[in-house]
Length: 181
Image (tube, rainbow, N blue to C red; front, side, top):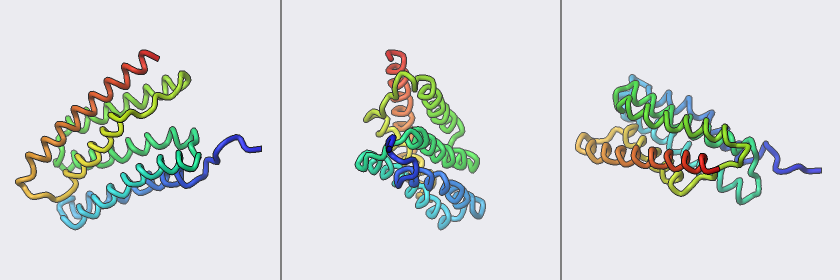
């Protein structure tokens, strides 16, 4: 007798693969002191692939009716691990201000803790704003990983400011919904 989707399935395997790829991404980001353009592009490609698997695992899980408790829990953890790996690495290198890393990671951790606290009352599904936030964070961080020309610093920083605004706004929205539940 089946009790639901198997925990070992393609969507969950992609999520685990995403976590296992992060040490390589961090290695590439720091290779040769983080100043090697080739390795920074390799790091960007690694983080980009990690982001693609994030898109794929959820769509596959829903399309194949393979949504599991394990995947529902691990997917956002893998998202936070990917964002955290990149942001902390960039801040250590002095490419991204520490305050940006702290603000975004504090929000991510607070929402994760809130999710765990309210899980008995039902999971609050990801909103369109939350999906936009993930997209903006991924691209925003990517602009700091890539070895971009100096003249793109201002547009990159403006994009990150928009990312921070959306990140905080969706965090507020998430807490508001949790309090109402």
